[in-house]
Length: 323
Image (cartoon, helix red, strand yellow):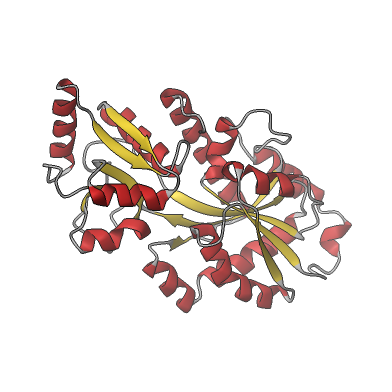
């Protein structure tokens, strides 16, 4: 999918109607979150919402609308008035949903004006301690040997089309190994199955597995980011381990309906960035293995284009469908 969000962003930059010239915001802002309470994007918004409200001079009212890979929340914002009073707080599903859900009444590439890339969430390749491998090379050799014997290594995910599913399929594509997907209903059950040894490995967020690795209940082989993680400096990236071009992250972004005036987008982005960079917020996010970003609308548009294109390639290659 080429030039995703660029047309929406260009239209926004050209718009600057009277809405942008009036006093904004003059009433509470509704931030619609695409997942239930407790998830990463919900946690981030509950951390930064009060500081954003103080900076903007109006309440930021959080509303969770989970379901359909985030498309329920996205649809509500796509059809909202582009006046700056309705935001979409979405995750990596913003990149995968358009490749998984057919006949949506809106287009992800034209319905939104990016406000900011809020955060990134690194992921870890982890395995049950019984898996007889000590590094990525040994793990890949084991996977090939098991496949040759007709008993492929299996991996857990939080369900078909989930971010761990995509992360593992990209790993499979770039490594050339044969592995079996075992989907669960959510990340929690997937990690519990891994701890029980009923599956061999998992690629999940650092927040869900870092403590388990430190306790010795799981073993970690690599991180999915371009750079090593400060909390695991000895762990290589999958790129360093030989998978050229590998990178898969969970992330959070804030968007508005297409046509929202550029000055409003810029002010909302500045409020989010400043809230993310508060020392207490950064410390809390670091403990959760979440990295604050706060990128500009233009940089966010480019990031979303890249993420949509990557998700499309993985979806087609692995023939990923929803449950």
